[in-house]
Image 1: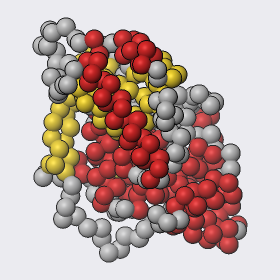
Image 2: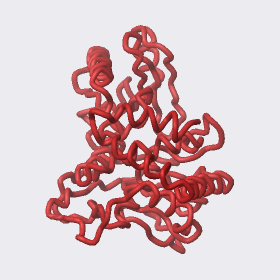
Image 3: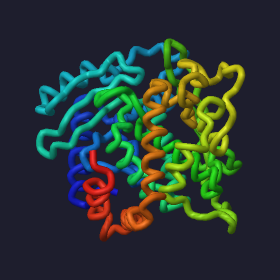
Image 4: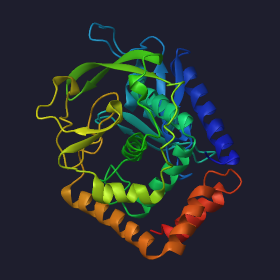
Length: 350
């Protein structure tokens, strides 16, 4: 998780923004944080915070029969204008995105936000991923290390801001959870009959409005089999370099890890067609392919980089052992920052 001073700074910035939103638009709006910071897997302190402004009058989104005029807050341009007037920095509205957002920076703390209006699916996804991290406490620390390595190789930029589009942090998280499931270290929470969260949300994508069912449990009585062994970094590189059949298989934690690509795409999956692409990593709630923008060249680079790391670990066992020691230290609150710095500078330099 973020260090205490950073966490306090973020909390202060969020509280200030929440108060501003309620003052400008009404008490029915609440600011909620989602993303990897909520389950302790953020690999960089400089990462933007993802926020959703909940509208208590529309808990299921904009339903097809809801003909009420949308409040002003649903205009990201209006929100951006008010934030600029309030003194927020680097304010920009991304109105034509699939999920419209406002980007802004708190002037006092320097904390940067990506804010959307009442799209609750990110919050529900975060709750699901957090539940997986609670089941296996090693998962968020493993994710920190993997994302740090992906970033160092130029493979953690879904937007393509720093080169060709590659893997989002979210996609990397789904891939890693699927591998934990494959190694029998995690169950399938969406198959649990005793739900701890069950709701739905109306999403509009590609001009089509869909009802997204949200349901998962905690698998409270689940335990990994005695034959299961902990996942190590070498396993991760080996699997994605050599063992996963990208042409025939896809990643789906909703189905317990990995499944065959279907011959026909179910209509429930909706647009964009998720079963196509060089890599298919399915969103566990919406079924969209989180990696549909990845080119064959980027996939080849990813596999090559995984193979290079694997070969280096095989050639230099002392280096490999020391690397794994630093990975283990990431889980120790006293040494976590030190270990991440050592990994960034010595093992995963850009």
